[in-house]
Amino acid sequence: MYKIILQKQVSKFIDSRTPKERIRIAEAISELQSNPFRNSLDIKKLKDSHNKYRLRLGKYRFLYALIEEQILIYFYKADTRGDVYK
Image 1 (cartoon, rainbow, N blue to C red):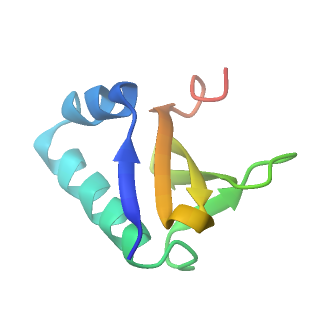
Image 2 (image 1 turned 45 degrees about the vertical axis):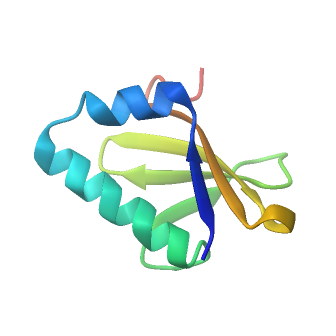
Image 3 (image 1 turned 30 degrees about the horizontal axis):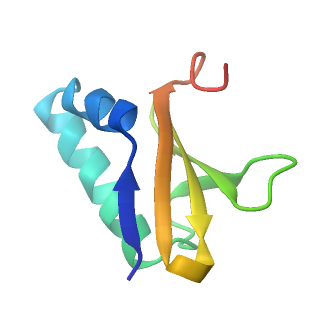
């Protein structure tokens, strides 16, 4: 099982969502924590990066780094589709 670390910006983003959306986000992160290579989630590897990925949940995008040596998933950015990649 991987350890999850959320950057402050990601935590604030999740806290500002509705309770229903927060539950959906928590379930997806929990599923990712148990197996980061699961096909049931919409995950894509970011171009030109060694260990950075994107998790899509509806209109929201969560960018994270997968650090295998430390068994760690570090979420560093979260926003809507149009703003997360800026």
